[in-house]
Image 1: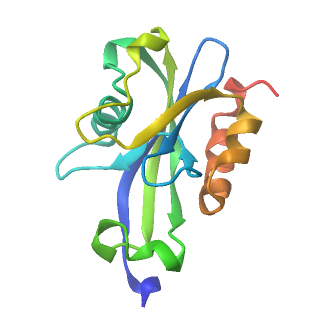
Image 2: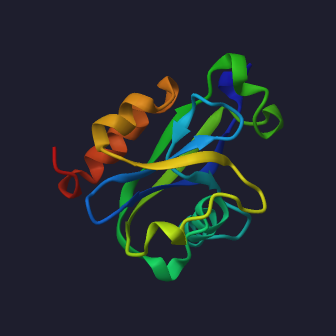
Length: 157
């Protein structure tokens, strides 16, 4: 029973540029799956450390190129759809429970390099909030809306 499986602990990153556009990456394993950077928390790692590590691993952005603006008060959860649940994390988790962080990117686009050792994205772009929400896989859309509402003061309509 999938519903009895635990959630994997993770972090999510909202990285905005000076125009309040959001870093969005297209998953390497699917040409239609766009998302913000996110990933698991390693043993004995605190969420903020995991956020900086995931940022570097997925985007090539170094800690010195961002400023932490805010972290979510809540942990947000999502369940993987049943048809893909067994393909992630060895089928051991039903989804993720994530702490989210909002970062201001102060570098230049050349500081971003998605061709990292364990590459996760095939492409990336800066997206307006509404465009990003339109391109997100459906099972993460409500979580993303909640996170952006939590960070809402930082996003013009």
